[in-house]
Length: 259
Image (cartoon, rainbow, N blue to C red; front, side, top):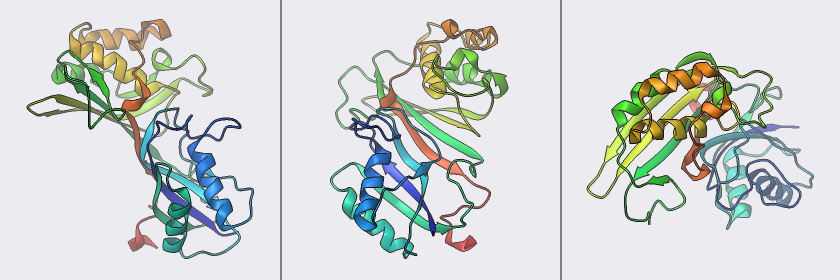
């Protein structure tokens, strides 16, 4: 059965998360239903990461096994037709080797978290960012973020229901970007690692927001990390600010120059 890699964008608001659920809409379920319109099912697809309810994606990657050896462009066009009007789009599609796996072949994942500091209600970014009303100090947030880089026991930033075998992870990147405009200031957190614990990025975001607001000092992040105690974490930021924006592989399946 030919295997195809799919790059997927979605708005997470209407979904109970990526993973298929019996009684709630999911991104996985939407794509599998579209595949069933093209070939008799059932279909089971695998993804690089299982995003939670309300979390968005600009670069999720999944794979599907089909009986027909589709032209990649025509497959993506057909899927997008059958996905309408749901906020899910296949932005790239490629034939891959039979042993290629969207999750297990991945070498890194990258997330974006958006925080908007603004008094007035969000209009264009409603549902697409976490709004806070107080000003945030991006420099202090970056100073706090530096304590999280590298290999650590991230128990403090791990959800109680996390199913990972170990809380030890290696954080490769955590950059704080500030984008100022006359009406608001946006803080973007760019986070990369091979893998993440459940709610790890949202826990980082909530903790660093406390630093940016002045409620925490940057060194308080270090103390919280070293405590290995979930109660020492800052608040968990809401899901609408979080995006899965990229997944890395030893060879990019969507790069035509390598195929």
